[in-house]
Image (cartoon, rainbow, N blue to C red):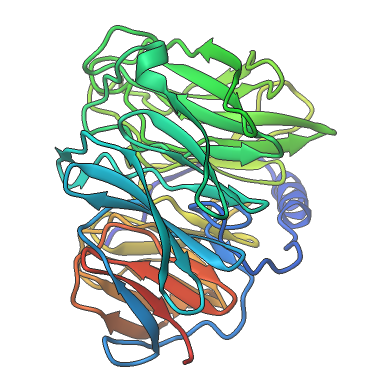
Amino acid sequence: LAMPILRPLLASPLARLTALTALSAAVAAPAPAPDWPHWRGPERTGVARDAGVPLAWGPDENVVWKLALPGVSGSTPIVAGERVYLQVSNGDRIELWSVARSTGEVVWKRLLDGGNEKKRKGDLSSPSPVAAGGRVWTVTGTGVVKAFDLEGRELWSRSLQADYGKFGILHGYASSPLLVDDVLYVQVLHGFYTDDPSYVLALDAATGATKWRVERPSDAPREAPDAYTTPALLERGGRREIVVSGADYVTGHDPATGRELWRVPGLNPTANPIQRIVASPIVSGRSLFVPSRVAPLLALEAGEAVAPAVRWSLDRGPDVPTPALDGDRLYILTDRGVVSSLDAATGEPVWGPERVADGPYSASPVVAAGRVYVTNEAGVTTVFAAGPEFEVLAENDLGEHTLSSLAIADGRIFLRTSEHLWCIGRP
């Protein structure tokens, strides 16, 4: 395999050392979190600060419990408190299931919306829920947004398509919401099937009331306005910014008003008409890592200037899987099962590219217990060392189709396939 093409933008050794020092300080690990409340985990970077996570498993090995499911979904399980929340595709119904974390027993099921339909390999159940404080919020590919309490009582419901017009995205809406304090941020970036504007929306998490809605214009051609990404949170200088990627740009928005504060181009330098973006941005400290459709992946640094600056770019990034960031290393997985580890400060290869089990891959990598876990659509999870050398540690085959990323909480892995939700751990 040829090495990826890197375009470093750090001109001197001093600049590189300064960037590395700043990045190391920015991504210092917070206290361990026993939950997985967001589709990319407690830090929104694909990392679980858990010890005791299983290395090996199989259909009859290290299975705590498994729960039968009616069909495949790209939605990731969310773990909060004593519950696992799961967005479920059940024929033409999209449902939310609340599952007992310790036993796998279904505590309650709630209908989110009808009208589910197949969209290439996925369907309209693909967005993942988000949970906090005994409540869970959901968004469906049909545009229905709902909130529930621990007992399954519906707190409020909204229909984005009824309020703001039909979605016009080729492969079906799949962006997950971002919850920050008491506000739910939702993006709708589309354009293939519509001339209606794309927008970013802030909802009061307690009531569902619209706090603000701002249009997000773009000159992206044909399918390129479509994005399946999830918003991220940037914090710097005592202020917060909501980061949105897709439609050829990365933008930062004022969380209080939605006003666009800055815009960075470069996600579609060749004006490719099919440059839709699936992999989401990762933010840690003042560092932002923004994939596009393979080329380029942009590494940005949010300094004192209003707009972040491009630190380095990579011409062989991921397409569907969102990378994982653990400390000073960025782990990239391609749809075909090629993995790489990069120095996050400089973009220089630590190792790779290397091949793992054959693809395709839709699930994003996760990092835990000094290891990286990557799962292909056939249900094979390859585990390799999160270290300076590439070393495969295990290959675990459940024999069931999957599109969903792993969730890891309190030493256990929650792996969703077309047939089951598996709880993997020491029994």
